[in-house]
Length: 135
Image (spheres, rainbow, N blue to C red):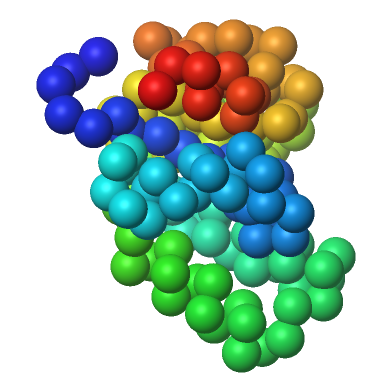
C-alpha cells in the first residue's frame, strides 16, 4: 500500500446499509465523506446503487438525487478499461473492475462471493468490521 489515504470501493450493499441502517457501513461512509479514506466508484456502481435504493427501499426521486450528488461529489469516479469475468454474478465483476481501475487497496463488501476471494490482484476484500479494525 502506498502512502496517503487508503483507496476503497464500498460495494453497493455497504452503501445501501449505510443509508438505511447505519452501523459500521455508515462509519466507513463517513470516513470517505470526511476525507479519511478515498472512496472509488464507477458509473455502473452508481447506477446499481440508485436502482436498489429506488426499487427495494422506495427512496423518493429527491432523495435519490441527493444520494447520487453526494457520491459524485465525494467519491473518485473511474472508468474501468478491462472486463473481468471471474465471478458468476456479473455485478461482482463490475466491483472488481472499478477496484482495479481505481488502484484500490480494499473492497469493503458483505457479498459472500466477493468475500470468498479474500484478495484480487493485491486488492484485499473485507467485510466492514474487519476493515474498521485495520484503521
